[in-house]
Amino acid sequence: MHNQLTPGDIKKMQEEIEYRKLVVRKEALEDVKEARAQGDLSENFEYYAAKKFKNKNESRIRYLERMIRTAEIISEESGEDEVGMNNGVEVFFEEDGETETYKIVTTVRQNSLEGLISSESPLGKALLGHKAGERIFVDLGGGNGYHVVIRSIDKTTDGDDALRSF
Image (cartoon, rainbow, N blue to C red; front, side):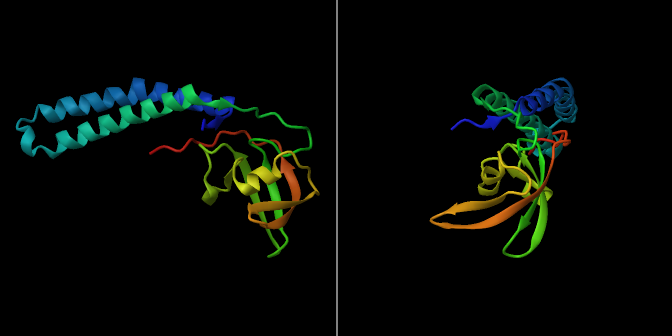
């Protein structure tokens, strides 16, 4: 399965790759060189830590490049009054009377603790394409689910949330 990414996600990934290649890589190589100059490598913790950081950076670069190469590009466009990618949505949960605000994002950027839900999650799938005031059933599979009401849609969100990094 390919990862679904928006053009904005790809741009952020390319910026991170460039930063890691031009800034982080240079710093990591310098750290390795300094640690190696301290002598005996068999007991040199700084050398091993520097090598580990360098390798982690290179791994992240390869990961991001692979994500871009294999991505399925999805549109950020949606109807004027419909929930779309990178839109904020205020949702009322009928069962418990709670109101929550979420932002619909791609799986790469999802973070439920920060209110960023994936467009591939049950709630994200249910909300996409619907309008404020609509009552929607969120299907959890096997006939289970719950109802929500879309209270409002915020189209002004800018999509500048950071990509997850390791």
